[in-house]
Image (cartoon, rainbow, N blue to C red; front, side, top):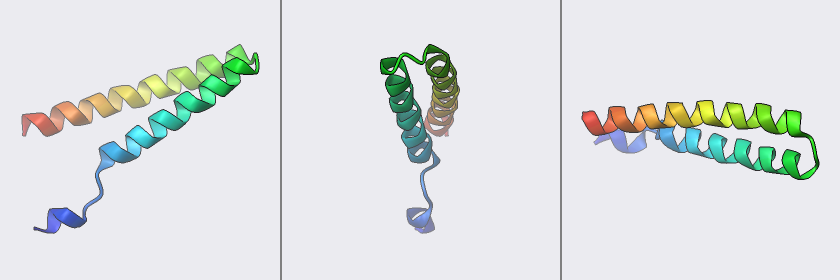
Length: 60
């Protein structure tokens, strides 16, 4: 019953992941390939965390 008021950490990670990808896209369009690669790497790390959360929630 009280789980209704808990925030979902996967939603927060997904929002951060999408924001990083969008920043990376803008960096690539502006020709800043170095920033693009760093932002893409950070986004992929967030994706791994998101996948781990999803597998942990499905195994419970």
